[in-house]
Image (tube, rainbow, N blue to C red; front, side):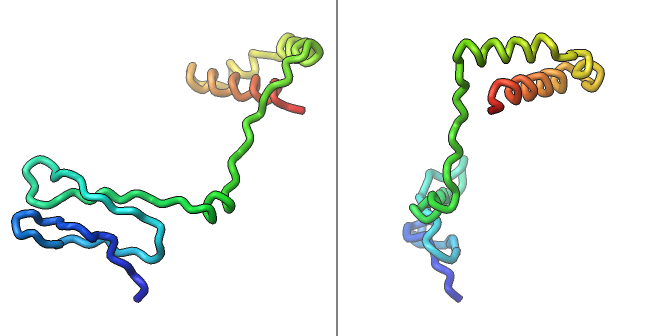
Amino acid sequence: MGYRNYVDFVTYPQANSKLDAVLAKGEYYKVKPAPPISRSDHTTIHILPIFTEKHRESQPRKKKLKPDLSKDNVDILRDALDTTNWNVFRESSNNINELTEAVSCYINFVFFRK
């Protein structure tokens, strides 16, 4: 059926045998043995994803925006923040967490817009 067993190590030490299996298609995982949990008689199986160049190409990293801190841009930011009606944020927020989130998003929008 195209599935591969990733477990190639002993999972039941008392009988020196493989009792467990991890089946998946493709070569996307790496499986490692780990110590048993508490008094278990089975080895813990640790499953890790393997990222390939194909995966990296399909999901390019986002570039972080870096603010332009020139004097003109800082002055524009000051003007925008000075003329902001902050009551709109207070009235539309139910608690301090919502208020903080809304104000932070607004400041990032004003600061990083081009």
